[in-house]
Length: 130
Image 1 (cartoon, rainbow, N blue to C red):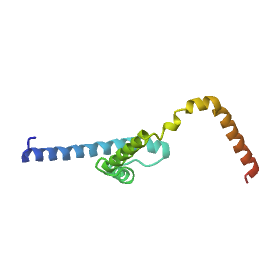
Image 2 (cartoon, rainbow, N blue to C red):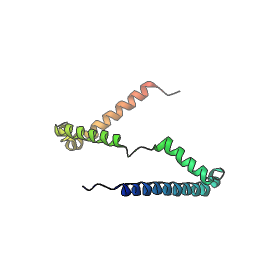
Image 3 (cartoon, rainbow, N blue to C red):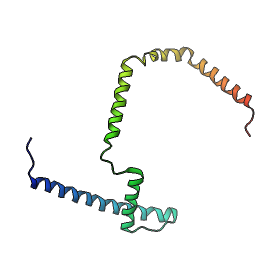
């Protein structure tokens, strides 16, 4: 693997800063345009300036999206969960479901009717709700 020169690293950093600034400007204009096209007509709210739209975008990112670096912790957790799920599945935890379709064909409808009757009986014993 080739080492990058200092000039290449600085170039990539400058390109990254320009890209982030470009996206920020673009999102500011998109939010301002959408807000001003929809919110005053629908809800009677005032129009936003560009800087108010950028501020709203930042506020919403902080409140709902965060500025995380790709959610690495979530990926580790989900892959760990998936791995344990597959291990449990390979141990045969789901083997008891192999006859489910046959059971449902033979007894499922009757079992459901009994369950429904039991629920109705319990509801009637409790009396009318106040």
